[in-house]
Image (cartoon, rainbow, N blue to C red; front, top):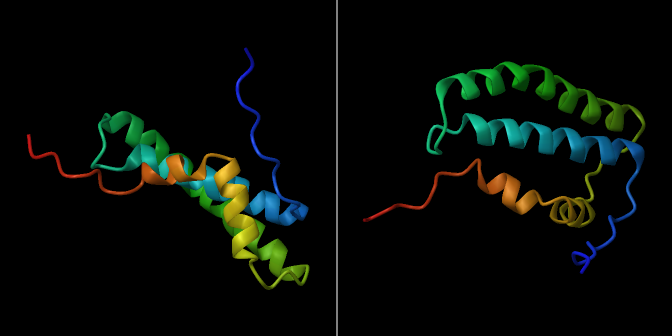
Length: 102
């Protein structure tokens, strides 16, 4: 049995696709650094070191969009792309975990 097919990715410009990819890279690293989540300091340190270059790539993606005249972020379309790429689960790792009253 095949896994369910994902919805198609919405049509994005190359720069928008790069923005989404770099944003999710940064989110993934922040999730690894999150002190409210289980992990070790070495893993967090490695993620923090990688964050510098990924944040630079995210900045460059936004700068390229701006230079090309793509001055507006189409939030609904970009949010759909984030959902298709599992952005809800990935960004949840950045937040403070729910309180455990056990």
